[in-house]
Length: 491
Picture 1: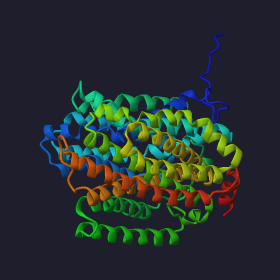
Picture 2: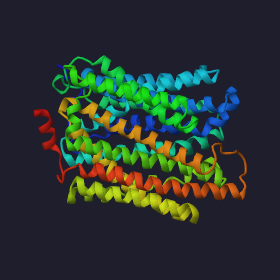
Picture 3: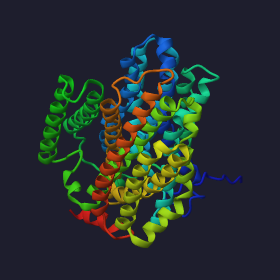
Picture 4: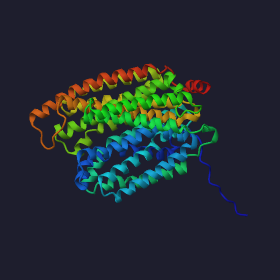
């Protein structure tokens, strides 16, 4: 009689990061490819414009179309995942993302590329919140969840920061289409890892509520119009007809969404959750971190490449302090949370964010070493606030609403990113010029631009300080938010 060895079942929870390396690596890879795709094509826009014969406005939509569909569909994707299964939706998103990335070989016009980028944003929305939600289900221990979230954030932010550097380096050797084609094999590896290492959701972990289709449509309209309003304000002016119409439409969609969610028996987003301090505070603080991150990234790219005249590769390398510090700051951030609790740790992080932005206001005049030092302080603040708030927000949700919690976290960051870019773009337009000329700049223009960035970072310091501190004050002194989850489940 021949004995057969059955394949051991995938464990539902792990007792160490090492034992969970397959699913954790797969989830990190999925998060990385989604984040790097946010910025990868930015560096290639001039090349794309020449190849496809497109103007500046069309090129802006190459990146804008991705952001709009991604941000608008996050809550809907999280809601679907809590009903259909998180692993199932993530696998579908990865398959769609990888397949669409390969479709770039058929693109012959900028309109087709914009459509492809919008479709990629939809696929990415099915990936981002679910990867964070699934990380929590790999572990029971709070400390392991915090460390796993640390790994996720480091990998994700590395992708966001490395996008321009990787894109600029690749363009020196291959055509721009390869920047998207490379996503296909990465998505495939992530799909295999999730399929092999992440267990399927149990029925008890999902909600049986019907999908709120009208609420989903209104949430997409609200977030999409809000992000478009910020983009339109920078491009056409805050008092232009297009911007005012978009703002009015966004407010109207928001009012209808709130009315719908309050009246329906099965809301997509239970607005009662936002009345709890932990959920509300974590989301607000995440808006502050995203304003800081996007404002700094956007502002420094302009400074390095235009005012300093650096190459795309050198400008990308200048952001490496962000990645290095993101890794090295782990013991400090975890130590703050473990010793003082979420509220105090986030307050420390918020003060570091505001202080770093004030340092950049001084540093842009005093050269790159001063900028690099400010980036180190900024990253410690980002690392502390982002990780603690992500953990607090998701764990404060009922067990069958973790995906919508992660989606709320990501939506807050997407809104914050749009706000950060809008602040920088608007202030540069007002203080310097509405159109940044290409080629070598005159000494007068460089001086004017640096002066404008000084004021911009001073404004960002005040805005981020207020928003992040406000959010941090709503957190609790507890080192664990399990009591909040229980409170929400009983509500």
